[in-house]
Image (cartoon, rainbow, N blue to C red; front, side, top):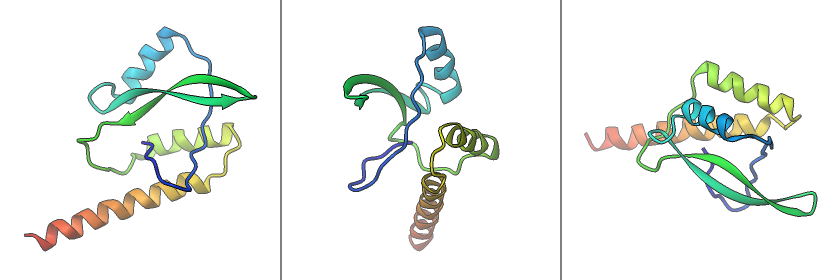
Length: 109
């Protein structure tokens, strides 16, 4: 998912899609039970455009992506020639967040 964090950036790949593709994406991303859809506005070649992103529902806890999903993300990063350090940093952040929650939970047992 994407969360605001001052000083951080999120590389995004941009695709032009139709309503049928959005319907298929909804299924793939687990909308609306796992993810919600958000419309965002950003600048592309000097013009403001709108885009669609999926954000994990607030009531869900972090979980590490399964191997298949992570590999799909890596393919996307390769397709757009993104620096994979962002992806690995996100994976490490998630793993550390999960460990921190588990340690806190164990302290309260």
